[in-house]
Length: 265
Ligand SMILES: [Zn+2]
Ligand SMILES: [Zn+2]
Image 1: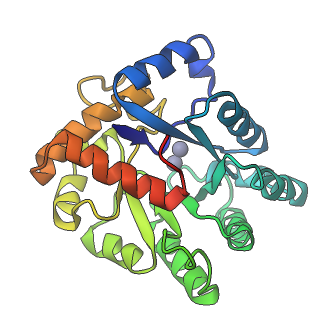
Image 2 (image 1 turned 180 degrees about the vertical axis):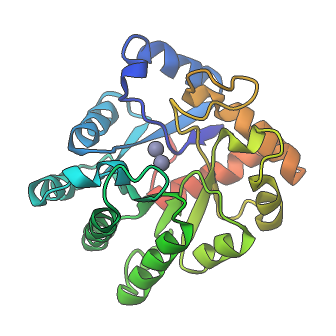
């Protein structure tokens, strides 16, 4: 059984066939799907999906692309939404210096403000980075120093760096302060740079994700991605780590449930 720890099921891409997408995920052994918001509206959509489907959980937050839209009222709504019983994290939040869709200083202040929401609510965070790994690691390290009690009562972890492309040292720095890293279909790509890191770090602090509708794994590259494809990712991770796919599913699902405080269905 697998958990897809990151799928944007609220996008237009799924408007016409979401029930089929979900049925295929269940047929592929996906027991739980975590849906992170990216704006006020999509955070509401994520919560709505979690109300409709018992095995869907939501995260709420402003993606760094949409940091410019995160005014005080928007951030207040994110904090209010985070009280919903199916909301398991603040996310996805972070820094994207590749596209720079929002000015960097705004991305940084909105990232910080949302970490503070997570601290107040004692929730973990889902972090997006692109060409911003060292800055994002520094930000969460300083939050961990400033708020030593944040999420430390339950030993479950403070968050996850999703679509992790960092090296082994960066992964270990994150593990030290209670973070996990998550791998999508990138592990299946030819000459993938993340394979060596994954081999070195093992699965103790690793989650799986599809990042649907993006990043479809081989052999579906270029197509719309969907949660059922997490099985392709698990198969590749199993090969990289010399394990059975079922063991990969078990370890990564336990990690995901622990981080997000999700009970077994
Ligand atoms: Zn992302
Ligand atoms: Zn995402």
